[in-house]
Image (cartoon, rainbow, N blue to C red; front, side, top):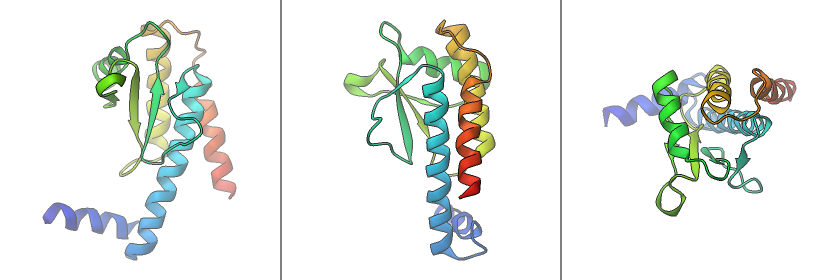
Length: 147
């Protein structure tokens, strides 16, 4: 009950104490962070698992053929203390998942993408130029700020 109360207080705090407006702000924030994450990961050469039906809650990302998504999950955790999730069931080893809903903001997304650039280049050997994923995300954030 205390956790639920804290979560509701956090949501209401997003809109000066108004729980309904806070819920809308929380979802809007997740949608922008999700779009920025997707743009950044695509710029790095990753493929989205569901590009035509994206979710504001989480993004599922395919790793290149012959690679194991568990390697990405473990490397992000070991090198940057970032928590992502491996695929489950038949998708284990094929996708990793990045959450957006909750206590995430633009700086969390930028930090994640900066770390993803390092892992993509150094661990997966992808042809990454540092900054390309972050720049793609910043474009999304800049466009959202103008709206």
